[in-house]
Every structure is written in structure tokens, then in C-alpha cells.
Image: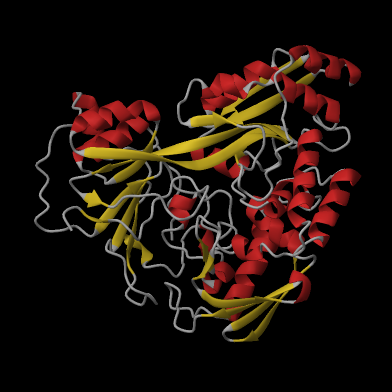
Length: 510
């Protein structure tokens, strides 16, 4: 079976519009007499791999074929999904899950406790990265109790593991597809939409059609066609012409959308990103804390956010009201004199390295690189990559620094994904004694009144050591053709980009 991977192709109808100079706006003649139950969406590309837990897979594509064991509402409430009940053991050192007994994967493989065990061990031991990393660090063993019961034992108290089970870390994939390796090129999950190779167009569109053996009520949109149009102008033209229903886009396209008469748009907080210094082992490019601090003091994120109304500068990863937010953190106010002084204290090193970028964040990377290059002896070169390549590699460790999504929504998971010695996105495999000590206290305080304050201390130490800085919160802009679809809205899944509530969408007029 040939994999359907990243592409730069534009559907023929869209290309024709661009070549003839048509705007595709103002045509409100779409025929809605027969409701179309196929939803066509564009998220700009296909993932390099469909392996569950891969950081190369954006939520908008992941949540088409895959489902998670649990769901998390925006207020933090955890709800059943593929797992119906859960119980933590004493001290949150284990978690027992009861599973649905009426679920099968798209290939007919039963969903059971053995399937959950296979997925956890695969993501933990094979996939790794920022989503597999917390599993590697936190899961000691997975035991099949019976067909519908699985027990997960932890290396330390892990009371937030149910939150992790609702996110991108552990979507459930067919153990048969994992075993034969086909899961990397062909997604096989449990959702209402099963991948249909025969109905797909290689390199252009992936068809996900109604799965008749789905365990629950089927959504209004029985089928989903996933497109990969990387150019915003072309993608919006496709929405306005009615060739596709939904796309992500940029804020500069909104006036065009509003004037079309056939489309609408909204934005929602989807991404938080920041500069991460990966090569921070002793002797690494950023192994000296003073060098990292100098780079952070040289950076003024508001220079970038002033260019894009969908971005907002922040002084830390978490926002007020979330666990992990520390009101005492002030970040790194721009101070070039202090930055130069810190570099001098570090021995005035010469720093030459590559800063990876993608079309969707190139402007931000260039602004940040320009700020860093103000410093003496510093030469940061921006290297642009295709979106799929960037998503798969920016945090892989092959670059000394990078900027991209940090999607974790609890401090435990953020620490486990990026900063602990065993974190999947800590290629240096180093952590200071101070940070490890504070994290140990925070894990030990699980379930006590002091837990939140303990994690706030960990977040302050991450900032003090300048492991990361340049925090930005990004709103995603979604546009859709109002003649064709209705109820296009933000998903309940928080801080997940390129995603709509697929379950809520209906054909226009219904």
C-alpha cells in the first residue's frame, strides 16, 4: 500500500481559479436541497506518520480516525469515552481503567485491554517525542487484568494521567496495524470515520468514510475528505468556491472572507509556543545557563505579536487560572545590556547555529533570529522546511534551538515532555539538580494542599534556568462555507490547533 504523505499539490479547480484571477466570492447559488453528509476539510498537509502519539500528527488529522480513552472538557472535567470507569490506586501510583466491550477497530480487530497495553507500550517505547516522553518517564508497567480491565502502574504519583489520556499522547490505534508497521502510513482507529484508500487521491485527498460498526451514535457528517492545500490564498479560494467546506487560514484573509457573502470565520486560542534550547548539555551550544539567559533577554516577543493580531506575548507557559501558573514569574524583559553582560560572563562564545522554520511561523522565527543576532558573536541562520518536515523534526534534537507547539495543559505533563532527564523532547538528557529536586517534591506532594505551589516552584525554576522563553499564545483562524455547512465550532479539546468539533458540524439548512 502506498503511503499518502505531505504534498504541495492544489486541487485543479482551485488552481484554475487562481490562474484566471477569479475570487470565487459572492456566489450564493449553492444547492442545499440534497444535504451533503461529506465534510471536506483542509489543514495544509498530511502527517509524515499516522503512528499514535506522534508529534508529527496535528490534532485536526489525528481526531478524524482516532479516539482517546477519555475526554476532557474545557473546565477540566474528565468524561468517559473508550474507557467507562477509572480508579486511582493509593497515592495515585496506579490507575485502573474499565473499557467498553462493544468497540472494534476499523480493521475488525477488537478493542480490549490488550489493545490498550499495546498502544501504551508502543507510544512509550517506540514513538517517544513530546507525547510519548511522559509515558516513558511515568509508566512503570501495564497489566491486562481481563478483557475489559487494564491497570497502569506509575513510577511516581501521577494524578493527572487521566488528562493525558484525553489528549494527543495516546489515541487508540489497531494493535494489528501497529504489529505489522502499516499504522505509520495507514491510520486505523475506532472513530466513526475509517480511512478508505480506494476513494482517496494520492497526494491530494484522503477519504475517511462512515464506519458502519461504530460503537456509538454516528455524527451528522458521515464522511470526511481531508485535503492538503498548503497555500492560504488557494485554501480560502477553495472554501469560497465551494470545493471544500473548512480550512484554517491567517488573519489577513478575513476581510476577503467577510466580503464573499458565502463564508464566515472565527478564531480560538489554539497554540502556545516558545523558544526551546535543545542542545543544553555540558559543552552544548546552549549548555551554559548564562548563554540561554542572554538570548532570552535579547528577545522581545511583542515585536512579533505587533505584526499579527492573532498572537499574544506571555511571560510563561500557563495562563492565569491554570494549574502551573505562577504569578511571581516575570519572564525576561528585553535588556540588551544585560544580555551582552551575561555573554561576557560566559566567556564571549561564538554561536553559530540553525533555527528551523515553516511557512506558518517563518515570520516569528525571523523576528526572533534577528533579535538574537544583535548579540556579539551570534549568527543564527533561519532554515525553512515544508510543514510536515518541520512538525516532525523541529523538536527532534537535530537543531540546537527551535520554536513550536507546547500543547501540554498540566505542569506535570509539561515537565515530563520537555524538561526532565527522560523527557522525549530533552535530547540533552540533562536536568539540573535544583530542577529535579523541585520536581521530586512536586510529585511527592500529589493529592495534598501543597501540590499546586510545588508545581509553581518547578515552573519558576524552568524560567530561572532559561530553558525556554519567548512565550506566545496564538489564536487559530478557521473559515467555512456557510452555504454548505453549519455549526462549525471550536472543539472541547483545549490548546489543540487545526481542529474543529467534527461531531457538531451539520449540512447547511439542517
